[in-house]
Every structure is written in C-alpha cells, then in structure tokens.
Amino acid sequence: MTETQDTQTSESVEELKSAAVAALNSADSSEKLEAWRVEFMGRKGRLTSLLRGLGSFAIEDRKIVGAAANRLRGELESLYEDRESDSKSSQAPVGSIDITLPGRKPALGGLHPSTQMIREITQAFNEMGFQTIEGPEVELEKYNFDMLNIPADHPARDQWDTIWVDSDTHDDVLLRTHTSPMQARVMEENDPPIRVVVPGKCYRYESTDATHEWHFNQVEGLAVDEGITLADLKGTLYEFARRVFGANRKVRFRCDYFPFVEPGVDMSIDWNGGWMEIMGAGMVHPKVLENAGYDSSKYTGFAFGMGPERISMLRNEITDIRHFFSNDLRFLTQF
Ligand code: FA5
Image (tube, rainbow, N blue to C red; front, side, top):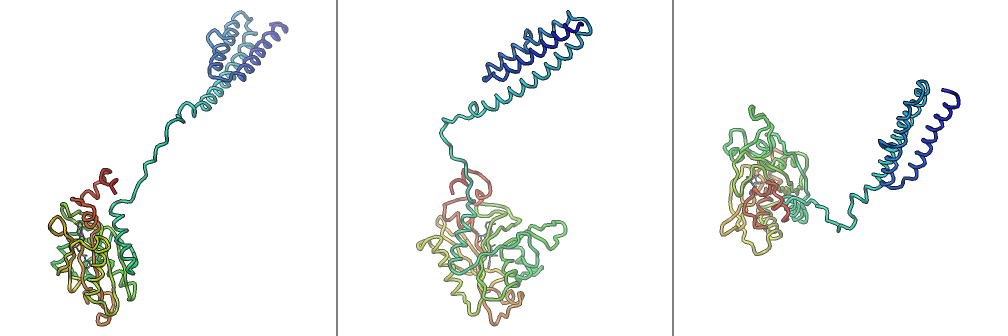
C-alpha cells in the first residue's frame, strides 16, 4: 500500500467512526436507535460495506484497515448496547406502571383471636391489681408436678397427659401441661404480697374434640397475702365474668379437685342449654405454699387457670375449638 492509499483508507474508518458516534448521540428514540443500527451495523450497513470492500485491498493494507474496522465494530457495538439499555430503563416506568389504576389497600395482618382474648382477660385482671408475667413453655417436671403437690406416683398426674421432650426416657423435661408451674416459680422468687396473671401456651398428649385441643392457651392467676379467703376468690372471679360476659350471663361455680388447691372449684358458663367449663381454681394448698418456703400459718392465697380459647368460643359463638389453630383465613379474618 502506498502512503496515500493508507492515509485514505484509515481516514475512511475514522470518518465512519465520527459519523456513527454523532448519529448515535442524536438518536433520541428507540425508532431512531433502530434506524442507526440498520444504517451502520446492519447486513447492508456502512461498516459491513467497508469490511466487504477490504477484499480489493493489497494484502498488507487489508491487515491494517481490517484491524481498524474490526476495532470500530467492537466499539460501536458496545456504544449501541449502552444506549439501548439506557433507553429501555428510562422507558420502563412508563411502560410497566399504570398510573391511572386506582390504589388498592395493602393486606394488613391482625392479632390472632387467642391473642385478642388473652389481652382482654389480662387487662381485666390488670385493672383489679394483677401484674402480667410470662414463663417457659418447656418446663421441668419439678415445677409442672412436684412443687404442685403431685408426686411421681400420684394418680392425679393422669389428669394431664404429658408430652415429654425425650419420649423414650421420660426425662424430667416436658412441654408444660398447664400454666400452674408458674405459681411455684413466682413464689420461689418473690415474697408476698403477690398478685399475678400468667398467659401462655400449654400442651397435652390427648385427642381433640370440639372443646379440646392438644395445644391451647391458659391464663393462670395467683394471689397470696395475709388473710385471703375463698370469698376473695369468688368475688374476683365473678367480677371477671361480669367484665367479660356481661352481668346477665349465667355462671356456675362448684367444687372440683386439683391437688394443688384446697378447697378446689371450677367455673362454667352457660352454653347452648348446658355448661362449658372455663377454668379450675381454688385456695392454694398449704403444701404448695410450704414447698415455696412460705409460712402457711401466716399466708393464704387463691389460684385459677382458665382457657382463653373456650372463653372466646362462648363470646363469639364458635362451635369448635379446632378453628383457632387450623389457620383458615375465612375464620381468622372475622376477628
Ligand atoms: C388445670 O389445668 C389447672 N392447672 C387449673 C387450676 C389452676 C386449678 C390453679 C386450680 C388452681 P384444667 O385441666 O381443668 O385445669 O384446665 C383449666 C382450663 O384450661 C379449662 O377449664 C379449659 O378452659 C382449659 N383447657 C384445659 N384443657 C384444654 C384443652 N385440651 N383444650 C382447650 N382448653 C383446655
């Protein structure tokens, strides 16, 4: 290649480059961008024509101009891709969001019906001077049974079919069968006077029916002081029933047996012409007070344990307790 030929062909690659870059910069729509691609990079475009024309060059010229043209092709391709992706992202909001659509309410969650009932129950007792505390669901046999006057060989253990954490060994760790172990824990850590309510989950190895679940909540109550009597227990529980069910709902209060109270009672609410038991209660057994290190000749107390799911059933005309934990939104969204 002569010096003149080399300069001419190199210039034509340069000229093509500056024409292509200028045209690309002024392509301000996707249509113009496409037209640019066809004009410069298409099968019959200017760069392709230049490359095709290389065949008529002498072999050494072909090498030099061919390398420059291929470099230009790489540069133009990458400039084009950048412009194309810029143009797509700047168009995306207009293309993908319909700003004329009316707004929709986001789906908000809500408190579970058991939680709502627990809050109402604990608030009623808070207003009567009880403090709310919580305790462990995985519990020691000692607190679930022994400290509550239920020794290992006591037939009353059968009242609470137990889920043991290690079912082979029946070691001393279990899922609490009731919230009563918190009576022992609270008394162990505190001196009288005591007034607490303890909401929380309980577990029992038992078959289910309309009023029994294998896991459910309880709200435990404990009051210990000098001079507390059965009249205080009855007055407190009737006031609770009045607050939650109103003054006209029929309440049944009768004797029952629990090893950790003496005397023991239970409370039921009228339900479809019969009764539904909502809690067990009684005067704290002197042995339970003494197990916790209290002087039972000085202090007395009452305790109760109630089921918030059953109370919610009575309040909301729910016929089957298993709805609470079946996670059916048709049920849950009614609260
Ligand atoms: C007890 O669990 C005693 N710890 C209650 C107690 C506390 C008595 C303090 C004396 C002093 P019981 O097993 O009856 O007792 O349960 C008490 C309440 O928990 C029941 O009245 C019921 O409302 C609820 N409950 C019991 N078992 C179930 C179950 N399987 N499913 C749903 N709720 C239940």
